[in-house]
Length: 596
Image (cartoon, rainbow, N blue to C red; front, side, top):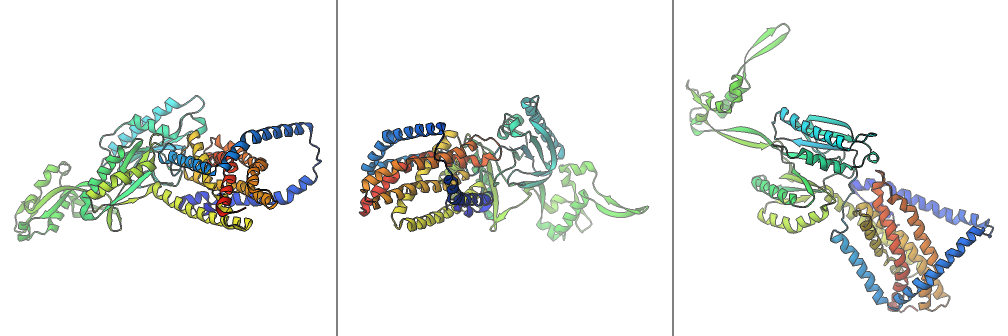
C-alpha cells in the first residue's frame, strides 16, 4: 500500500511514475513468495555448523550489538518511556525544526530537478518586419560566441560542441518537450549546439548557457533573447503565469505586464524574463474626413488608390509565348521606400480634381500585435522566466509574488486577473493527486492493521511514527546539497512502508509479551532490546541496496537520486526513532486508554 499513491499522480508527471509502482509491487509479491516458500527449503538443509570465520564474525557481531543495546540503547529507551511527555515534545520540536529548513529555503524545494541537457539553444526575436540581414548578423554573433566557448573548453580527446546549426526564419522557442511557441518570419533566428556526452566534459549545460549569455551580451533592438536547453521534464518555465484583462483595458494590461516583468527581474537568480506579446509591424491607418464624405469619396476609393500606388494596378496583359505577363503601374521604387512621399498621393475626388490624401483622410501611425491571445473572452499575456537554482528558488519567489506583489497589482488595476501556469500549475496538480493517493493508502493501512491487532488504537501507535521519516529525508537532502523534488516526495511515500513494517515488529512483540503475562512497562522496554536486530537489519539492508544510486552520475540516475536520498536518510533516522518512539507511544496509549 505504500506505493499505491504513485498510481494517483495525474498530469504529465503521472506518466513518469506509471511503471514504477507496478514494478515494485511485482517485486514485493515475488519476494513474499520466496520468503514464505523457498527460504524455508533452503534453511531445512542448513548443516547448523558455521565455518570458523562465520562463527567468529557472529561472535563479534553479537558482542557489538549486546554492548550497544545495553550501554547506549537501553538507558535511552528507559528514560524516554519513563518520561513520555518529554520524549513526545522533543520529537515534535525536531519535526518542526526540520520543516523550518524547507519553509525558510535552507533546503530548496522545486517541482522537477533540472537535468543536464545534451544540447543548448539560443533564440533571438526582433520586431516584426525586421530585415533578415539584421537577424543574420545577430545569429552569426551568437554562433561565434558558442564556437569561442567550444575552443575554451575542448580537450585533445573530445570537443565540447559536436554540431552547431544556425537558422533564420523559423524559431521554436524553448518550453515544453517537443517545442514551445513557434515564431516565423525574417525577424526570428536561433542557434543550436549539440554538446558532447556529459561524462566527457567538465562543464554542465547550464554553465554553458550562462557563459554563452555573458559572451553574447545585449543585442540592440531585440524583443527577446533567450539561452537555454529543451526541457527534459514535464515542460513549462519555473515561473510562468498569465495576466488577463478585457480588451477595453488593454493599456492597463500592458502597464501591468511591464511592472510585473520589472519586479521579476529584481529577484536574485531570475533571468530571461519575457512575455508572449509580440508587437506587429508599424502601419498607417486611414480615417475618412467629413469633407470626403460630402465630396462623395468613400474610404474604399482612398484605400484603393493607396494600394495602386505601392502594390500597383494592372493595366494590361501581354502574351509571351505560352506565358501571360501582367503589366502593373505603380510609383517608382525610390518613392515607395520614402514615407515622406506618402502625403503626395493624390486621390480622384470625383469632380475631376485630384486632391492630396491628407485633405480627404486622417493618417495616423500605429502598431498592432502580430498575434492576439484570448482566454475566457479576455486578452491574455503570458509572463515567464527562468531561474538559476543555485541562486534563487522559484517556489519562494512565486509565494512572495502572490503575497506581497500581486495584491497591490490587482488593487491598482481592478480589471486584471491572474492565472498561474507552467511548472507551478503542474506542481500543484501532482502534489494534490499524490496527497489523495497517500490518504487512500493510509486508510487502507489502518484497516489492515486494525484487523491484525484487533484494536482501533494500536494502528495509530504504528502510524504516528510515519511523519518522522521526513526528518532524515530533509537532512539528507541538505547534506547532499539536493533540492526537494516531487521524486523526493515519492521516496517519502515509499518510506512509510518500511517504517510501518518496523513498527509492526515492535507492537506485535509487546502484544505477545503482555499476553504471556509480562508487565506492560517491562514488555515495552524489552521490545526494542529483543527486536533490535531484525529492525536494524531491515533498514541497513535497504540502505545498502540504495546507496550506490546516490553516487551515480548518469543522466537516468538524476531522476531517482532524490528518491533514493529520501529513502536512505529517512531510514537512518526513522529506524532510530522507531526503536525509541514506538515503545513510548505504546506506553502513552496504554496509560491514556487504561490498557493493562
